[in-house]
Image (cartoon, rainbow, N blue to C red; front, side, top):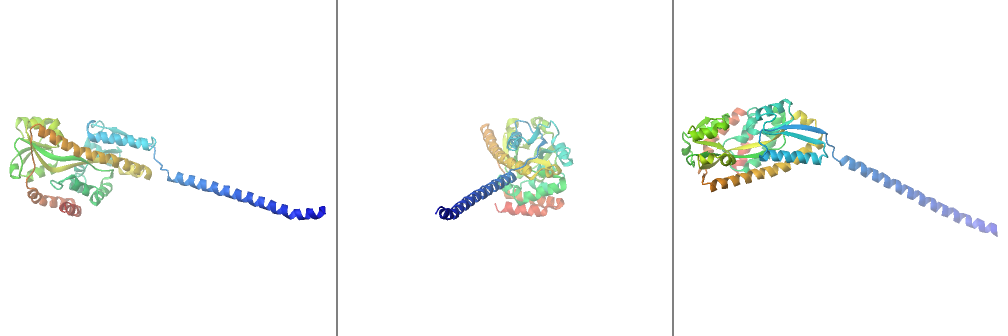
Length: 358
């Protein structure tokens, strides 16, 4: 009997052991799968985490430390350092403490300086296509200029800059429209006839004022106030902030919002240095500057509105050219000639397609 019971229990015990073995095996396989999945997730997370270069870049600019562009560049450097975990550092040298603006751009092209504050009007001296951005009376608003500068035309210009100049622009910003502060009001082209206006020495400025029929006189900016005070010139051209903060409005209380030219600036970096940086580093630099760029553009626009109001409150007469079409007709041949000689006719045509639809 006992033998029979033993024989009957044996299969049951085997089944039980088999079941236990199966459970143990399944549990082990599950844990192994979970471990593999966790390892895969960890690897994917590691792969997704950005890798930043440990690098210190020198940036030179000529603006004073209280200017909006210096504030924006400083904020950019702080953002980069924080978001890269201290890997990316930008050392800023303001107020021409390292190079003046011309020498800084030359140094970036040569690679003896990493970065500087570029100016499209100044870069046009070495790359004619950038003249497009400062052609007189081409843009009548920031919206129109932005559609050109931040669209396909701007991208083509920046690509040419890398090819021809060995620099990479990281994002252009407004430095303001230029206007006129004069002793008598200017409302028409006829009012410009033989008007003695202080002008920078760059050819595009001289061309602009000569086309208007003025008599431009090249005077260093440091001597502009004295020149206007003495009667050597009867007006100057610059931004509204300069008219107010440097007291020019006390010598000529007529402000013509001519918007004859727009000033465009932004950080540029040596192309070889840029291409040596990792894609993650490049992306972080561009993304963080884009944030600063948007804020800076709005500050410039708000600042112009603020100084226009201050000049009004100071008793200045604010005017504009009454017939913009007259200006367009007057300067279209100049635009065409400049584009033909500079080899950027296609870019001009693309720009005019945008300008004319406004």
